[in-house]
Length: 389
Image (cartoon, rainbow, N blue to C red; front, top):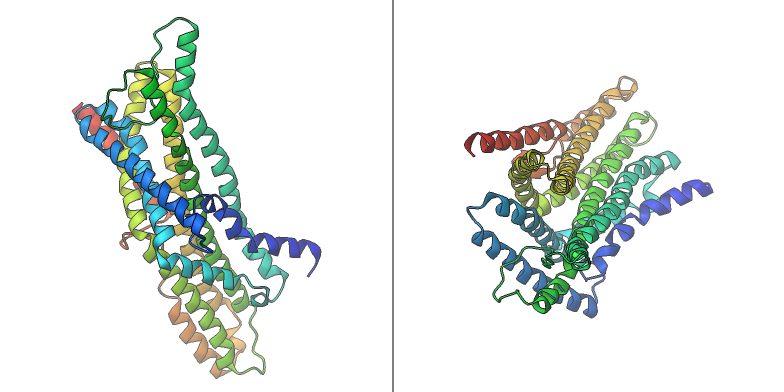
């Protein structure tokens, strides 16, 4: 193995370590737990739960005012998504099993040549690129979102205008926040909420990393089958290796789907409805010539569309590689094989008939075709709102 190949393999092996780093900050990463990590997680999840509860109370309080409801949901719905993913990754034992299975797959002994490493590295690079770009984008936008109310307050103060400090995140107030000192305290207390955006994108990168690893393993298996030859080896041993490898991929994919299907179902429902509401509010801001509101909502809409697309992209990749595996069996040199090989080949082909899927609630299958349907459903809500209001 040359130096460049070794570098590629090291990048693949370090994928989970790179993606998991933001989660280790507050003890969310489920592996190698320490007492300090458990304490940090307990403190943050308690704080997060209290803050989210106050956001939901504010949502109930503003019911009837569409603009305030949309403003609340753009924050609370997203925070609830982050909360669900946080609890799943940290508390669901299956997550550790998935991580262990993937780390076991990334041993150098499991690869026969450089080409197989490059295939897996190509898929892993997708998760790495999303992680880098996504975290940079969300860090910048989260900081801007947090400091904008303070900036507006300071500008108004310096220009002798009406200076009112507004909290960056909407929550229900149990006390009067008219005094600037109280508002400033609440403002400072909400600073850790910036982390939720970073965590949410990281959790998406983690799920994308899991799926891309499965796709890479399927692609490697397809390559081995395509290049398979009829030699003197026992066909039972040859096909047993392929079958065991395929079964392990299927089991890991099933663990993945069982772990995240509930979170993906909530996100599917929430984003479909929320996109419709936000797009409607976006159109109202255009009519009112509200440039700042248009920019904020446009950024939010783009972010939500990207996240929906990532889910559909992962499902499409799994489906594509499953079909490629089936085609690999069809395209191998079966006509040159002995009857024993042909019989084993037919048995293996049977196991590929049921594709691996990424689902929401175990009934909605993510795919690029489904992405267009989600966008259409959101636009139906927009049309309904424009007709009724």
